[in-house]
Length: 130
Image (cartoon, rainbow, N blue to C red; front, side, top):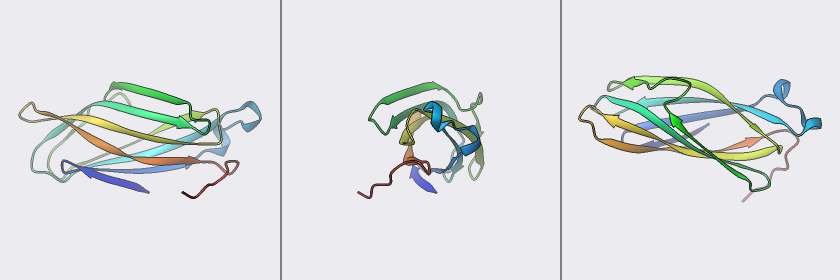
């Protein structure tokens, strides 16, 4: 589990390798990741945009930007939580994801919240300790 809090918004990430959706013989590995967003602040906020940087084991970087998450732009009042699950394919047996969400508060002020970097590790990937 990976977690980070920015501007009273906590992001918790739990990645999981999906062997049944992966095809190593065809150069395809697949992960699901579940994300929980917790509003620990005193203001209502809305998640408006996402920005991901996905890096595979060869160093190839893909950037993904777009509105909301999984087709939603959730609103979180103080103390509320929103959770979702999505997926990520790679052409290598390991990689890393990191990103940010853009939120807007009830006064119309926008701010970014960090998504902690998390590893995408498959049983076929070599593990290297840094």
